[in-house]
Length: 88
Image (tube, rainbow, N blue to C red; front, top):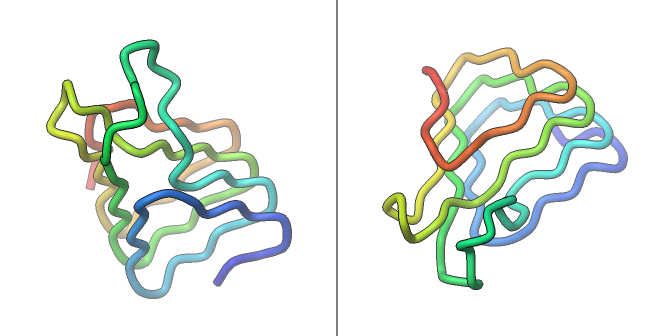
């Protein structure tokens, strides 16, 4: 479920039964100076609750080009992924 004002972009895969709240930005470019527009991606598992204003970036080529968020997580406001994988 995507609530209002959610941005999903880039090479992003979102699993089943996720709820994403207003202001979340999913699949945006990483906040990393080394990123040069490479073909990288974000994969979000199943049954996550992603609350307002969370930012999840695609990966960088320096770290295998993938950001992974597991399943059954509660991601709170102002939470941001980095290039590393989030807990499952």
